[in-house]
Length: 344
Ligand SMILES: C[S@@+](CC[C@H](N)C(=O)[O-])C[C@H]1O[C@@H](n2cnc3c(N)ncnc32)[C@H](O)[C@@H]1O
Image (cartoon, rainbow, N blue to C red; front, side, top):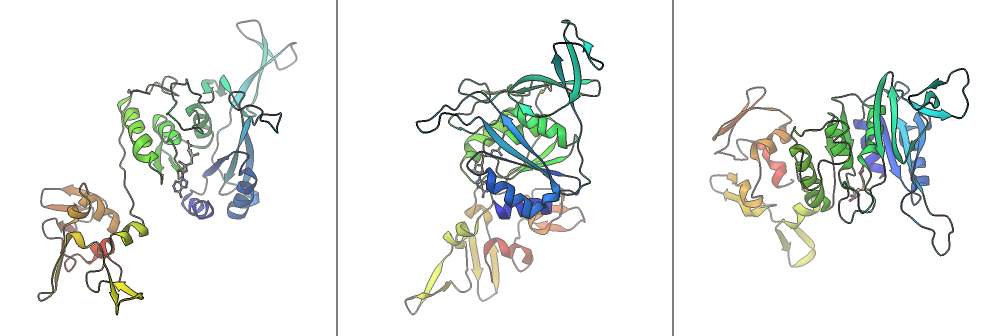
């Protein structure tokens, strides 16, 4: 996780926060890692996500594991956060207690923890319901076979604590995508990263249901509390890894010796869509041959870091009026295309 956390620090806003959720297998490493990357001065809290559900004593251990750790760090002392109160009921009245509609004596005290159950917190006079029940087999939120799925209610509390509407939230280990679904329903922008097949199998269909506001799982989680009706959009990308690109490479052994293998001279990588005219020194690439559903304008936008202003059948126009002729994607004309295909 080290390189991810280093990158997270770089991407994090000056007043932003970082939460790292780990169980007993790794929490002690996580704390050391975060101290060294974000600095021990930026440690805010060790939140205990305590639950009664699930887990049972094992042969060698009479006490079941009943909590995970969520490390809460910031980037600086100048962090953004909101304060919440919780209602605590007392047996007897004393100077700060009030009486509620059921005749109970209660006081509003600073929120102290995150715990299992349905409860109300207060931001000033605003009442906010939280449903922080673990996701078990019969939960509506449950995505099959994913044992560590978190309830949206847990993410809701963390997101309320540390962000405003419109803020950007990033989960670079997205899993079932709970951070993303919760962020979306709470009108935050989000970026998710996932390296496993869960992306296609779980996150993508789940996010589509969230956008539609209904489906096999939706409405579920915080949908009712935030009156989620659907809406919004997202884009997704499959990033090609170095290994994938190498797999598509064409190699040419020199003198039949394995240690002399080099990329096939001029045609270095991804030969499938490449058309080369050596005499005219002309190279053209048909991206669709390598990636059937490729979005060429979007790919170019990523490569050159400019936003798209207009797309027509034949060209794409960028924010600064730079135009790319989609029918004539040659490396000669557009040298910025080269990194997509080969290294030199
Ligand atoms: C426990 S899940 C995270 C749950 C999620 N953060 C949430 O809030 O619901 C951890 C995920 O990290 C993913 N993962 C592990 N290494 C990764 C990497 N290098 N890049 C992207 N995802 C990774 C795993 O595939 C797994 O799905």
